[in-house]
Length: 170
Image (cartoon, rainbow, N blue to C red; front, top):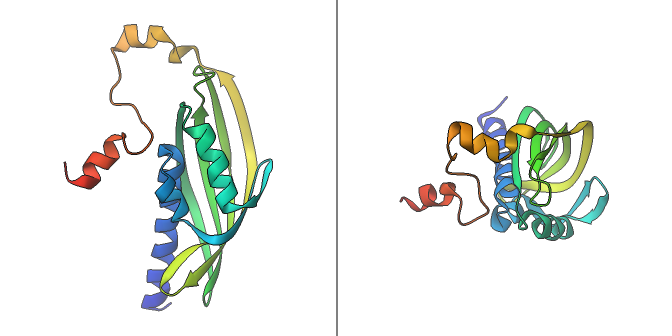
């Protein structure tokens, strides 16, 4: 393995992490920076351009709710300016319409990455769902605040999340 291989692998991992930040924070710039402009995405019921997926996702995400995505078991098969990448994800989600309903998703992103110039991004993504579990979470009711006090800060969409103050150097 060469130094360039290590740098390429790290750039791919950074891109995967940036996607998670983008989807969790409804950060359009972060999401768009993970896909090439001509990329495709097969994401559950959605199949089409990555740009179309981002627009559809942001419409839903900006209505509220909470999300957290974590990536693990990242396997990268470098093939010159292309890479076949499998990464496992865990996602916990709730929506503004049903804040006490939590959905746990586990699966894998199967990505074809391409390096164009010196940058790696997703050229094609297929999401494989290995586990889906939706349950009522009574601990996420108002009684939770009474027991533990108000939990702050809570995650928010860009640019209001505490992350963006950190990035600005505040």
